Length: 416
Image (cartoon, rainbow, N blue to C red; front, side, top):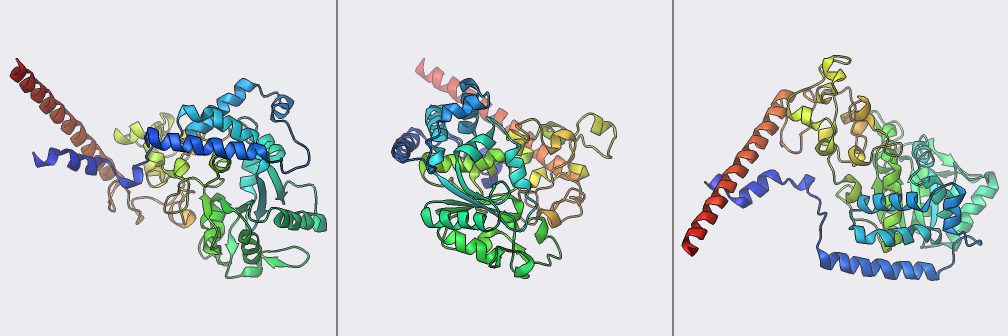
């Protein structure tokens, strides 16, 4: 009966990589609530970064966003940040004082896909909130200024908001071929630009797979020596929001957490916010039931594909990828890659292009499934192992329930 001890079962079915503390207790949330109230009261006492005090309600009505729609977004964002519903009024207030936080956004070696994903998002039209309300002082892709005017905007922002601004970086940093990226009238390499602007920032937010871990530019043979922001910046907090592109919900979530609490969200070992990357895609995948049942797509267009079976045998890397896109999805929650029949490529993981890309068969790779702890010879064995573990769990639960019932009966008899 040693096998059925509670601590043994807890160790067996609770893996550290899958564990997120979503309920930290009343005392923790009471303290956080008080901290957020003080933070918001301080922000309200500050003047907006821009000269005009833009009214938040006017922006909502300008874009035909009702107050009801806004509060639906507030509820979604509160849940995304893993906060109790009691925080919703504070999250709403945080959105209304976002124009007190200055932001500088720069691009290095990238395709602008993250900017594109952000401005194409909504709920409620995040582009208005971000571009018109949050004070982005410099954004090379979107700003009207160019040339010397743009550079003056950047230098003025750095000087005015020294030690206060959030620096968003999009794109990888070439360190082996530094001059693969240069910018400005007085040429500055990517390494120089990121380090100079990071020095006076409150924190650095690396947006997208490239800025986080090097992304596609870092794929073999990586001629420019592309790396992530955290590899060239030191002495300043760095947050990674990987994926290709980064999900706008997670970008806004990091900003909201900072506005709300004055601090950055809790991070994992890869500097990713746990509220967004504490989930394994596989655990919340809509096709997970087919994996457990051993029902796989064996060939594109076969009967399994027509019936939305699991894409694992077609190279889906959902079991090895940590991201909340199976929950929040993309395009305003409309859909996501697996939903349209395309397997996960693990784009929120380091070296994803060389290691995880869809066409690389799992059985032929050296990827170790985190829940199993070893290399499997076939995907059927993986499914069989998990099914066996599940069956053991169900059996253990039944035995423990029976033992608990027996114990209650004995106790009841003694009382009689």
